Image (spheres, rainbow, N blue to C red):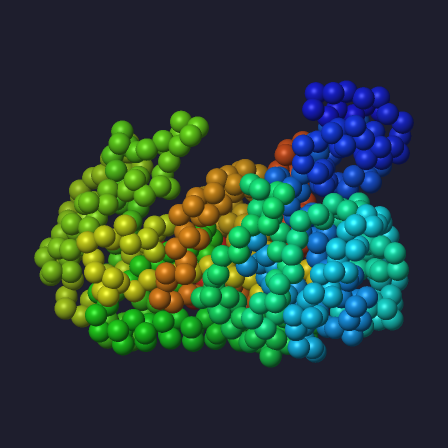
Amino acid sequence: MRVTCNDKILEVEPNSRIKDILKDEIENSKNTIITCICNNKVKSLNHKIKEDCNIELLDYTNKEGKRVYIRGALYIMAKAFKEVYPDAKLTVNYQLSNSMYCVIDNMEITDEMITKVKNRMTEIVKKDLEIQKVIMSQKEAREFYEKEQSKRGILLQLNKKEKTDKVSLYYCEDYYNYFFGVMPISTGVIKVFDLTKYKEGFLIKYPSREKPNQLAPFKETKKLLSTLEEYDEIYKILRIDTVNRLNKRIEEDSGKETIILSEALHEKKISDIADKIVNNKSTRIVLIAGPSSSGKTTFANRLGIQLMLNRKRPVTISVDNYFVERENNPKDEFGNYDFECLEALDVELLNDHMQRLLAGEEVEIPNFNFTNGHKEYNGNILKLEPDDILVMEGIHCLNDKLTNSIPREQKYKIYISDLTVLNLDYYNNISTTDTRLIRRIVRDYNFRGYSALQTIKTWYSVNRGEIKYIFPFQEEADSMFNSSLIYELSVLKDYAMPLLKEIDNSHPECAEATRLYNLLKYFESIPDNYIPKTSLIREFIGGSAFDV
């Protein structure tokens, strides 16, 4: 068999392991090799070669490499807790900065506890213990967890049509656990980590991709954490904090009650935000920002309804109409137009129009023609009445430089994002970014004519803009709105899975598509006819009451 890696071609025997045939490349790498891409699919270094393949070795600087590293760190942490505090009911909650926030349901977390677990983790890493993959049937896995893991592990509820699915568990010394995805082949890979007490839980910290050999500084995000904790607590009270529990609810009544509760929570939060805006008498302009596929359009419409019920008429300006003329648009390091930087907007004109509108003047609002790259004036005249509120949504809306002429006290800033709090189980959280990507795949296909392949291809550049222009300003928001719906992946599943399945291993995007496809397999489906016409999820699947 033929293996190609870094333009090097090797003839190997069938069933040879990647770690053996590429031993020199792995040992001589500048950074520690964690995993690999084999024929455009993420594979363990223990993977046995069974066909001709192209292999790319991955270290921590690669996003897939970082995922595997974090998974390994969490596995070692869970193993250490099992050994030092065997009765601890541990839950891995969500990512904060370059850390995962974890809690223990039945014990008070102390500095002594954290120190003992951290020391045990360090010992496990120094021993460089092998982490082996063990395959069980679903029946065997359920029986194992009932007996050995105090029911803290995942009880798979895959689609009933897929009865041949096997369950992959990871084994190290006498410790078994399930983790979603590829694991490092040994504990010695996890060289850089830390455990620190934080709030009511603790953080397991890891490096950034840019500096893989040192811990990244932790950036406090108090408002974001508060929003996550609020939703997390609500869904724990409702006992739908894991996919297993959600699936049981769906089996009982097709998810109807869960849909009603989730939609009621959204309506309550939107109403609360509208009340805060109206009660702040100095507010003249509402600014909304959030990452891609957060549901900003539907949120703005529903917020407008609540404002009108408070006798305030919302008047909307689109930031997208204020791009600079195309010839003046900055370019990025690759020589392409950078439409996401602040300098791509005609900030001076936008501020002039806002000031005049807030002064009660009539203003002709431009329409930006994206085909020819110029602003056009087609007689769109706006004027604000005394009780009107200007509403504007855009990537830079939380950055005061966009609205530099408007006093801060006249602005009410809202950050919106799909902040997923649902977990696969107590050890495997679901990434907020993954949920947004699945939303976008479905929306792009339904309304923009893009394939899942095209959407995944552009996702990196979308994320890059969010990291640079949105996330640094999220804590400046006056309100945060969590647009996640606890049931949404059960609805998006039937839309997204056929699209993801079209991406085969001839494309580099196959690794991402396969991971998302396997994630969605855990969810029972909810028919879309149960979803209200005003639901935020309608923005992605269609049938929204707000569609023009």
